[in-house]
Length: 112
Length: 122
Image (cartoon, rainbow over all chains, first blue to last red; front, side):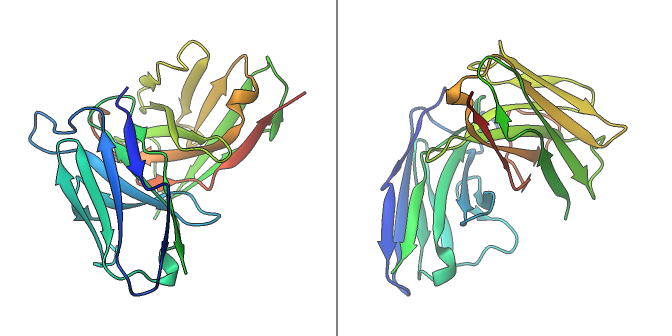
């Protein structure tokens, strides 16, 4: 299985300040179709995960533009440009280039 | 926007079989998408359990394949999970979710149920 590792595991952010989460995979997530299958999810308290970013850097419909994703190969980053109170939750990266799809351990984001 | 809802016993005894059903509304389960199960042990991360296609074709996580069965019931717009010989390690919140793809070589989960906690204990 592809192992996906996130850092940090927890993060406390002041409203209006940036935040960054790193995600590293044990193998390249570049598919032979040329796309890289790395997704970001957020699980807000009491809710199931909801998708934020697909294929490294593409926001799903309705996701605020303060969220951005970047990276390639095995190293990826999710950035929140200006954190807001509603951004509290656990953020997961997920790879789907190889079955079984696997998730990072999660990064708990707290807003101060 | 579709809705998925998990149902089943919240408590299962060790060595018995865990059985859950996912009821799908506002989507047709016969559409060309996969339907999957994911679980989250308390305080831990997410694990992809497996998925089923409307034809009945399945994918099982190799770590669970000897104990796992996922089936689809198109007449009821439901799909189900059975996990046998459970232990405390199978205690988790179980989510059902839709994979908006007709193949599993790549993809994501776009719509999730709210999850149901299953505790394995005597």
